[in-house]
Structures are given as C-alpha cells and as structure tokens.
Image (cartoon, rainbow over all chains, first blue to last red; front, side):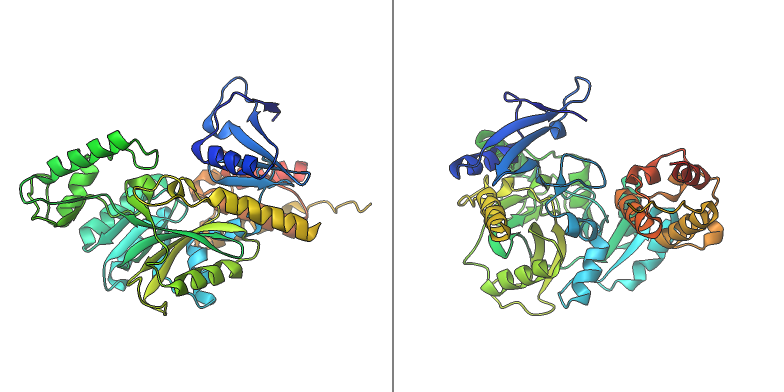
Length: 354
Length: 84
C-alpha cells in the first residue's frame, strides 16, 4: 500500500506527544498516510520519525521500526519478538509463572467448547474475573464475579466477540499501570474504577451525573463522561446496589470493576506511595521477555506500602502496544513524559549498536 | 542460491490438521478438511503463530490472513500454498 506525505493530516493524541518529544530532541518528523482509495481511517495516519538515519512510525501506541512483519505493515513492531507471547494473555501468564513471577490462577477456554468453561466454576475458590484472551482497553473484562449465574453470563458475553476466553482469580487490591522502558520503570499510575462518593443526600444516579458533568467541564481526553447504562445497572445489582441508592457520606460505590482509564477509571500518577520493590519486580519481569523494549504492565497490589513478595501482588498482563495518553492527562497529578523516555531508549540503543 | 524444496501436499495437509487440532485442543478426528476454517474459530494470534510455525516447518512464507479466510477450507489452503 502506498505511503503518502500528509503534512496536514491529524495525528492521534499519543502521536502528538511523541511528535513533541521528538521535536524537543531534534529528531526529524513527518506525517504519513497510508493510501487506501481515498478512505482515511485513524489507523492510516502515522507519525514518521527519523532516528539516526532509521525510519520509525508511530500510531496509537504502536511503534514500528526498520524491517517488515508478517502483516506486511510499514515496519516491524519494535516489540516484535515479544509481541507474539505477550499478545496471548494466557501464555503471558504461563511464562511469568514459569519464571517465578506472581500471577492469578487461571484457565483458558475456547468458545467452541464453552461448556468446559461452565464446568470449571468450582475450580475457583473466590471471586472470578472473566476476560478475553486477546483484548484491549479493558473491553470485555468482567471482574469480581461471585456466583455461577454471573460467571456463565460473563462467559457468554465475552464469547459473543472473542474466540478465546480466560477465567482467573479476581485478585483484590489496587490496580496499577507500570510503564517500562528498557531497562527500568519510568512511570506508574493508579486506576480507580468508575465510582461515586456519597454525601448522605444524593442518589447514585445524581452523584454519577455530577461526576460526568465535572468530566465534561474538565474535558480531559482520557476521562470522557461515563455512560450510565444497563451495564452500570447490572454491575450495581451484582453488589446489591441500584441507581436510586443514597450512599452514606464518604461511602464509595463502584459503577464498574475495570481499572483502565479507557474504561472509565480515574487515573493518578503515583511514585513514592508505591514501595520501590514493585518497580524492581516489574523491571525484572520485562527483562525476562526476549525482545521487549517498552511495555505497559498491569499489576494488582494488595498493599502498596509493603515490599513485594509472592502472593501480595499479581501480574495481570503486559501490553506491547501500550497507550501513553494516561500519563499525559491524569485526573490529578503531574505528567510523566513517556514518549520522551521511549525516544531516549531508542537513541541509546541505536548509538550503542552503531 | 538455494532453491526451496517443493512442499509435499499430503504432509502439509496432515500438518495443518494436527496443528489445528492442537491449537483448539480437540482430537484430529474432529477436524474436517472440507469445513470452512472459520469453523475452528481462530483469532489473529492463532493465525500469526500458525503462519510462523508453518514457515519454520516447510520454508514457505504464508500470510496470517490465510488462516482467517472465512470460506476457505484446509483443502483450499493446502491447494493455495502448494500452488505458490
């Protein structure tokens, strides 16, 4: 497919930040468009970067470098060697477990034989999370399932759109996204699922409307208004709540169980609050994966003030095409320049191999 | 320059059936080579892995989309590869 110069095309939000970081480092950039018979999709507009004579392309978390991949795209994913493993969440889980890292117990099923998944309910002793094996942005994730009815319903829901499904222990703790850029963690943020805090007077519906009004006012691209729909009603119902409830002052009611910013969670950068041992264990896990240059790592931590030990934290997934917007538009807190860190890593690698 | 050996049709046919059965976790007897590949519900990771493993086994570069073609059967895929 031909690649055209498109200097006036609109980059996606993450590519905008990558471009700013490149300009700050004197790295030449251009905007390119994949020609597709006059139809332009978001995935067709790429930021082109020239690092020490080599061409890179960036779009929505995907960074392509020199070479070709099996899908014959513009270039080869910088994380190519790691991508095949890490795109498969269950194989990632097995790999991490084999290498001594803490993961939730889980099972993999195919929707062709969904009855095997139903039969496995009793293999779990606590809350269950059902999710696609190959999903993103928190889509299709159903955490905190505590009964067979919702378990089977979640499996059927995921099976509507995904051929392979994971059921795993729904571990409890705070959810964090660590951003790894070889050889270390460069940023950490916490994701709090969409929730409201009671005042003793307002209903959940009213509190949610107020929160959405605040989101509209602040207009952060990473925190759009959250749809209060049947999904929310169902989630509330699973925990004995409804939109008409009036929570007590300071009582937090969750409208979702998903901690991804893209799925409605509030995200905050954290650093000193998290025991430094978690940075070390995440870096070690990423270094264990051949060919992994940068990644978003999802970790659940039972107590962020305590040192990391087996069983007090769990790796959920490692994302090879991680979104970076959450570090530029937190609900509260400082920006972390992830794009700059990625470019600095690439420049260092190029010069080391040079 | 080394010229790759021609691919044995029967060997390739057997390989794909066994491979598919392994991926989906079912006996090879459950795989009907005349069924559309979509019956076996592969996802994109399955397709890329299959393409890579097939290339390693037979020295033939196959696009992963080969394993995602809704209407193609294993017989069709083998014919397409051997015909390349």
